[in-house]
Amino acid sequence: MLELSGIVKTKLATALLAIPLLLPLGARAQEQPTWHHGLSLVGELKYPPGFQRFDYVNPDAPKGGDVRLSQTGTFDTFNPLLEKGEAAVGLSLVFDTLMKPADDEISTAYGLLAESVSFPDDVSSATFRLRKEAKWSDGKPVTPEDVAFSFEKGKELNPLYQSYYKHVVAAEKTGEREVTFRFDEKNNRELPHILGQLLIVPKHWWEAPGPDGKPRDITRTTLEPVIGSGPYRIASFSAGSTIRYERRDDYWGADLNVNVGQNNFGSITYTFFGDSGVEFEAFRAGDVDFWRETQARRWATGYDFPAVKEGHIKREQVPFRATGVMQALVPNMRRKPFDDERVREALNYALDFEELNRTVFFNQYTRVDSYFFLTELASTGLPQGLELEILNEVKDKIPPEVFTTPYANSVGGTPQNARDNLRKAIALLKEAGFELKGNRMVNVATGRPFSFEILLSSPMLERVVLPYAQNLKRIGIEASVRTVDPSQYTNRERAFDYDMTWEVWGQTLSPGNEQEDFWGSTSAARQGSRNYAGIADPGVDALINRVIFAKDRETLVAATKALDRVLLAHHYVVPLYYPRAANIAYRDTIDRPAELPKYAIGFPDIWWWTAAAKQ
Image (cartoon, rainbow, N blue to C red; front, top):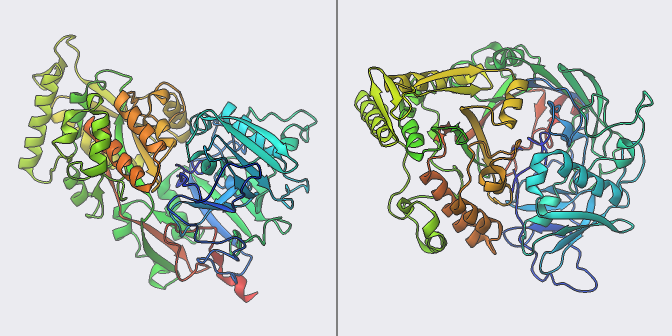
């Protein structure tokens, strides 16, 4: 399951990530439904009914102060549901969801807007009971009509919602404070949980006239500050440049157990930059308070400025514990010759990760070798046990090598290894109908040289892609590199308008319905999906269903490993690299609990402004 958001990329992210559901023991279909204060995947909930707070927060965290953050890119809309334009970062601060995850558990969620949830034994529907105290920032109550409106408009306007909630066919008011979602299939146990992630917007506000007297239109972008039920409001902004969120003193949920010790900053201000280098200079200069470092060279050599030496900036590495990832160069199989598996495999042999890691990354990174890298869900060795049983069920639909040959990336790092890898690439291309003529790789049937464009969203990525293009040139392939602005990149990405591009898929420890959007046949032609490679394969589809309908944790892990193994065997992407920990730096004006939650950094939710304690 993923976190939608970004808002949908952060919205329902980041970890952009998500969590399927294990129904609480003892749930039975009955005339009087059983109401649950939370949902869990891997057994009993940690926190019982009526719990006081999450263990990882500081209940005495001071309130106040302004934390200054940064973002590369721009924004042109505050509409949180529409997948058009560039939604402002931080919009999730304005809106509450039905339920809220606990960052010290793998797969749980507890009531936020909804005080409880119920479902029949066959999971053919789910009913959420809203808190009677839940209110919008204008004082009006949050209603079942708001929830149904949010669901319906989200599915209508956003391809991610359409995929993620594909099996949720209706939302209707079934009580004064109750809303029921109907499913078109049974026993998809993740559905109640991912509905808890649904971001709720106010129907009455969107259907009322705006300040200009004209009707508001949720199908369009808008820079009118939207209202929500969340802990912050949009206080001010400069279009595309800055946005300031201010904590609401009248927030209805301030004292809820799921909110104690959180939402501590008095305001959160984002400044937008067109260049990440300039953005980092703002952090160095003291204009930004928190920085997540993504450049290995800079982390190794770029923190010798006075604020670090004087102890005003702290640096930490926080291990990844609950987030898997596939970062890769992605050939678009909707275009030839990338529909040929041998061509895609050849492209992998041209990437010399070991040389890049030594010369560019200060040996800080590890080559990604799984679509669920850094988690227990990653396949290794040869399949055994339940994983092998699942693969045998689809034996006629998957590559035979998944049973005999563990996946392994090519290994470079030396001149000899590099030459050997390029020879293997040439041999694969020859099998696919290409040959070297002079210094050009040519399609034998058409006589056309093999050339393509690699589309990037940031100049920072060119440090990796340009050496890759040089390696391709050594075997006669002309790969041009084109970096475009964020808006143009977003539009081309949504329309699958690229030969090859750079993508990152985030995964949690509980994959589910979002896998259809990543790799399923139904998403291959749907613009706006995250099936960037254009995968449409019956074996992959069958394994995605095994993941979604896994009856327990053991089956989920085995089915996910099987899916991972088959995706790797098809060589859909050229795997890149990833760190094993998040590198963060922050000024001494902000602080955090002594122990971070096991599965998150918790920023900015559980952090606070240090000077506020002295006021």
